[in-house]
Image (tube, rainbow, N blue to C red; front, side, top):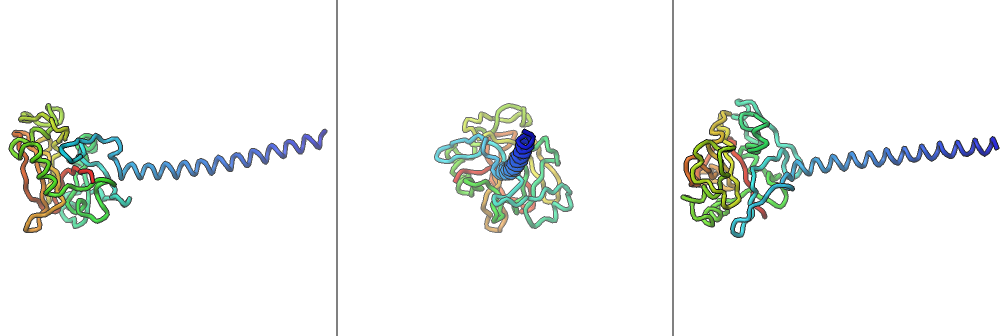
Amino acid sequence: MKKISHFTIMLLVLLLMACNKNNSNANANITQSNAANNLLADINTTGEMPIAKIGNQRWMSSNLNVSRYRNGDRIPQVTNPAKWAALTTGAWCWHNNDSLAGTVYGKIYNWHAVNDPRGLAPAGWHIPTDAEWTTLINTLGGNLVAGGKMKETGLAHWSAPNTNATNSSGFTGLPGGNRYNNGQFLYFRIYGWGWSANTDSSGLPLYYRLNYNDGTVFRGAADKRDGLSVRCVKD
């Protein structure tokens, strides 16, 4: 009987050791899986993002808020004004370096990040070209009225008067402001920018802007060091 008892105890110990090893392996796999999922979530934050179907296009209905390029490389966050002004590579920040602003208005990116070959837009999306912005605006009736149809309504996130805002397109344009090429923050809750993938004839990157005091869409050009919001369009 004693021999059987000893044998039984040894068998139970071996079984417990095997179970613990399997659990450790399972936990390691879960940790690796979670790490991969977290990376994927940071690259592709559009999983739960609402999408606006406007004509034949599908646009993000909120500003881009990723901190990695499509290939997984981190995009540097640059808060210091002098360092921002000296950038020749991609970077992001929150307006006024305030993470709470980022939860609503997303991140601000310089054009070096927009134009980086590693891809700022998540998989299945891209930075809109000048032609795609033009298509959007024409679908909504032209630049004199399209802005009102693109702006989020009310004054929760826009400064008064938020003229002609109906958001009838579902675009839900937000005034995330900008960061000037010297590192200064400007126009929060006043203007909502969106980068274009294209440059003008002089090589300056193009942008489109929604305004708090009218219903138009303004097209202009900026310095590559300027920081603006990003909207993406579906491939």
